[in-house]
Image 1 (cartoon, rainbow, N blue to C red):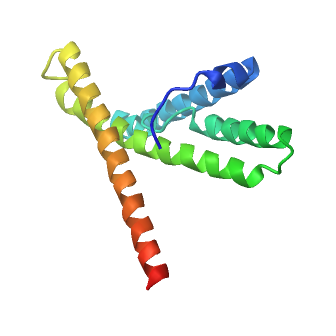
Image 2 (spheres, rainbow, N blue to C red):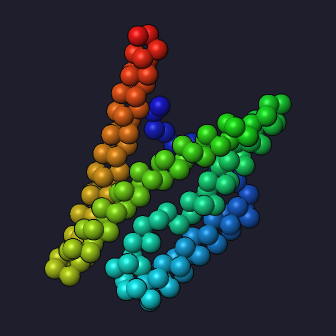
Length: 153
């Protein structure tokens, strides 16, 4: 699968779906703030690495895919769950990158200029997310090859 940008999803999304995403993002941020007050900023900051809009995004992706299949006259709930699962896997990989960003910010904000820390943390985020994606892609190929061998043998 090639990575690409598809803007057609922007036209499919209704205004209230954006509001739901904004609400979920705000709730996750408030929860992280409450956790930070109770257990300290280091613990609270870990919860900000959670993709704040993921819960809303996953449900909206599932809904749009199901509706698309139903318009085509096909029961699409199984396919919709698979599409949402792929999105969840991508969110998990992105979270690894956010963890790298947070680690760099935590270690260097007190000793380096802000602009330099942001650049360094962004590079680490991109490298960690890309590395996680490549490892997953390679793992899938190895899994498929082994499964194919076991069917033949």
